[in-house]
Image (cartoon, rainbow, N blue to C red; front, side, top):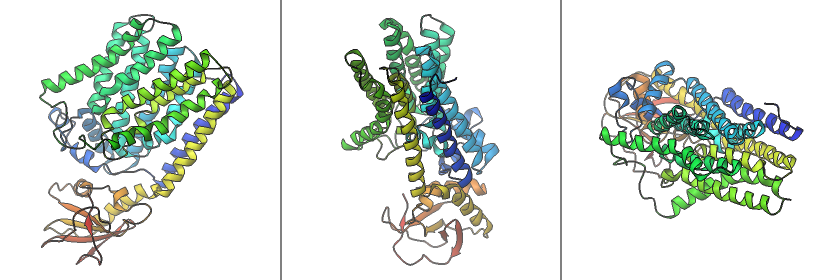
Length: 464
């Protein structure tokens, strides 16, 4: 697509350049957060039907996630770059799907390009999408959800092409089989349908056709869970009561990340009055509702999940494209969007540098390699005391990962499924780290591991 004016050309060039800079930084510094050893370990053998249909340790049922990790791990092992390539390709396909949605709604190449580029390069939302191995299945789920809606628009607008609508429903089922939060795909479909009905003065019946494949996909997924005797809600794990304030905080943080994109693109309507002003207001409300709807199942989490941001990226992108069409001043709208792209890049780079993202990939790999080079000792648990837990990059908490990920990492590195391990840090976050008879102790510092005979001085606690 060739942008229609200079402001759009600058916007397009900035989007491509900012995304390229982010990817280049990942390549140069190995800044791929790689702590998903649990998913990879649980997915071993998942290429067989009995393997990929199994439940995770926390009760979640994500067959396509297990199959994907098993496939990538078969070729990549613990090498980071194949996971980074898989993330990059999946994210690009998601952005393409958003562009297709916009083209179907408006039949406008400029709107299509705007939506696709915002989806690609809105780094305050999508930075994790190409730099965090643990989000691979989440990005895959969002991508399938977007294409479910894209096919729904293609098959339901101004015609009733049943095979295309059926294909959209199948993609909706597949999205849920990657990550159960995709049951909220209808929320994104409703935003797209509302935009399409408003644009073409179409009937509510047409809008229902556009939402139907996403709804049918979710119902088919729930039926499938019932048939294979998998509970609709995991019996244990991360989804549970977290108090009233946490969902509200999670919702507020997500809206703060999404709405500036719509606000920037709405600047073209600032000088407009009457109908244009009302249209911008309605779009803001619809965007906020769709944002909350898409992430509704994960709002109960007790932490800021990356899912809050990559899941709402399509919503922000489609809404920004819609806002850019309101009012007469496209130059102002695209100038503001260009500034948003630059701010998102600067902010993402700043946060990543602050958190030591350039150390994540290399330190995780060098830590495992250093441990493998030491003589193997059998006995009790393997205990790593992390001397870097107070460093800016967070030591093992950001390289290997928290909780039982160290045990899974060591099992994957050795092929020994019997290894039990614990990571201990000098921050009061869990129970005291007490070494028992037969335990094998190591000190981890800056990607290097050395064998020690007794715990280091100080107070040490097991990293939860």
